[in-house]
Every structure is written in C-alpha cells, then in structure tokens.
Image (cartoon, rainbow over all chains, first blue to last red; front, side, top):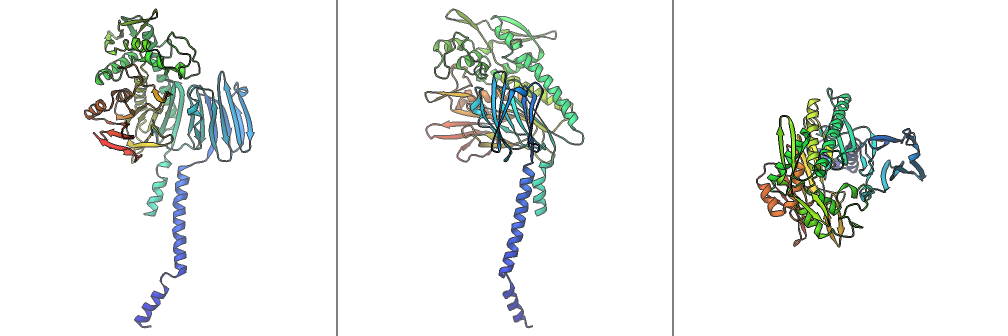
Length: 157
Length: 366
C-alpha cells in the first residue's frame, strides 16, 4: 500500500460514528463512577431515630424493622398515627409537647409542631443524615438521626 | 489522576467519629464530635465526655443565672455594697468579665440582666413559663415596649466597672457595687448574667479535659454560637460555615480552622419585631435599649474561648466606627456584617481572609 493510500485510509477511519459512541460511553461511565463515589461517600443509610428528653433516651424507631421502642415510664407519653408513608409522633412530657413526622420512604424526620416559645425555629428543622439533630431547647428534646457515625464539619451562627 | 480523585472523594469520610449531645447545661445544646483512631477509642471518648459533663454541671451550678442556688444568683440577690464569697470558677469568670469590660470600654457588659429581663429576653420568656410577676412586666411583651422609667432606672445599675474581685488565702470574693435605684417603692440592685463568659469557660475546661485524655481531634459546639475546634486530621482543617444572618438555610462565610475557638453573635439569634422594628437580645449597656447599630452579626477566631463570646457581643454594641477601630488593633481574626441602609447593602468588615460565600456582600478589609 502506498503512503498516500495509508493516509487516506487513516483519515477515512478516524472518528467514525462508532468511535464517538464508544468515547461517549467511556466518559459517561467515568462521570457516573465519580458521582456514585461522591454520593456514597457523603451519605450513609439512616438506621434509627432516637428521641431524648432531659438527655434520657425515651424512644427509638427502627427503619428496617418499622417498629417503635419506648423506654419504660415513657410509653404513655407518645401517640403515633400513620398517614401514608409517614408516622406522626406526638410526644407530651409534663407540659411540653413536640410533634414530629417520620417519612419512612424518604427517611426524613421533621418537627411539625411544638408548644415551646421558639417553635418557629423547631418547625423549620428537618433531618435526613446520620448524626443530624433536631433540638428543642425549651422542651429539652433532641431527635437524633442514627446511622454510621461519619465526620461532619461544624456550622456556626 | 482519576485514581487520586476517587481517593480524595472517599478520603476524610473514612475517619470514624463518636458524637455526643446534651441539653442540660447553660440552657442550650452542646454537641461534641471526637475523631477516633487506634489510641482514641470509644471508651476513651466516653470517659472524656463523662468528665466534661461533670465539669459542665459544676460550672453551671456556679454561674447559671437561672439556678437560684448558683453563685451568680447569690450575687444578684445580695445586698448592694457587699462582698460575696465565691468559688475559684466564679472568681475566674468575674475576672475574665472585668478584663473584657475594660478591653472593650464597656461595650461588653454583663450587668444588663435587669434590662434583658425588662425587654423579654431572659429564660422565663422562652420556656413557656412567662406570667407577669415583676412590677415592670407587660401584659404582652411582644406588643408593648417597656416603660421608659424602668429603662432609665436599670441603666443606672450597669456600672460593671464598680465590681471588684479579691483573692485572699485561697478564698475568693466578689464585690457588689453600692448603687441602688427605687422605682415605685421597689428597690433594685445590680444583676449580672455571665452566660457568655460561662460558655467560654466551659470550652476552656473542655479543652483541658481533651488534652488530659490525649484527644487532639474533634470539636465542641456550644449552642451553635461557639465552637472549640481541635484538629481534624493530619492533612485537613475543619471547614466552618457561618449561617447567614438574614437568609435562612444559607451561609455567608467559611473558614478553615484547627486548634482555635470561634464565636459569633448576632441580632438574628433571639429577637422580636414591633412596629416594623427588630428588637434583639443584645442590649446596648449605654442606652438600655437593644442594639440598633446595624451590625447584624460578628465573629472571631481566637485562642482563648473565654473571651470570644464577650468580644463578639461587644462588637455588635460598638457600632461600625468603633468596631473598625477595635479590630484594627487586634491580631485575632474578626469580621462583622454591617447593614448600610443608604445603599441597602450588607458589608463585611474584616481583618482576616475569610471565604465570602454571599457574593452580594461587599467586603472591606481592615
């Protein structure tokens, strides 16, 4: 084959449609792998919700078992109703009341009502990652999302 | 290159941590994260956290203005012109407060408790227990402003410069000034709140406990307005994000920090609005009114946590010009956000290199 023929053959074969498709697939796989790594590394599954009052654990909810466990003495302070995929949990302790929603499908918890004077802050709180907290200081209630403990940079202000 | 990118994505998230939270001290949430390694096990963390809670309990017992038996409450209820014996913790807290008062020319002033109660920013207004019990209480504190005569009266009881401390033969004493005022037949004396200094002292004590347990990596957040940051890892610093004072859910600053304390104060933390004006919990000790300096938030990164909260509060009181002058002489990293009402713009004044996340904010380097 002459040199001219070789260069003609090369120009005819470079970047044919099939090559473009192959390159596109390779790039897509690389991008997908990066995104998957980032998502997996930043989010870990939520296993449990723990509710604390006065620093005492009073209730846990397990996503995998779809069950509530109450600490002895606190059973009558909880009322739970199911609405679709969500549990509406009402916790009344002495004169303080907190109502929160557990979305079992999206694994999200949010405070939807509280009778404390800072309830406007409580009601804006929702959590979905391990070690996230919803805190109601006046009622001394902490709702904690529990999963594998992962390092998390702090927020101030 | 691709491999190193993957590794960096996974990198720090492999660090294991142990988390703790409590709501029992200083009327706020205290959250702690300790980084685990081969020597810092969960047992070591549990031991340290147990020691921390013990110390917090002691400090709160001495310094809480809401505990009737605390030494601060004893001071507040003591007669004017009297010496009160206190613990070494309380003596230290008063000493720090006196120094901060002096260094800020009175902009930091813990002797505003009566004014704070008058304006509706003490605990009894926020824990659902408010009933009218004081002669100066209003029917609805959110819909009426305080009586001017009480503002003027309580302003006369804010001379914290007259407070003194004495250490003698391992005993500690605090002097309560002699000034009293009488309003409608009721006598009032100076009342103080060392909450900010108390939280700072708590951070200082936690720092010692971590060191005693050889814990060098982690952080403690006190009420989300003070952070004691140790190290994060051999390669990394903690990335601190600062909540935006006006945009909920957003951040306006960030900084990389290790082995320092960070504090913020702001008019967005605790406030109410009346006739379109914001009244926040930071009381101006020179006017008796909540601050109206247009400084909406301030922050500092410094070594000693005991001073941090006091100085950020003081900056909010000072106003723009004095705050700029104060910061210009300081070696620690300060920033404050000023609302320029003429330009309808928020300006960050700083003597450090924070990363500004809200690009609509102008930055002025001091």
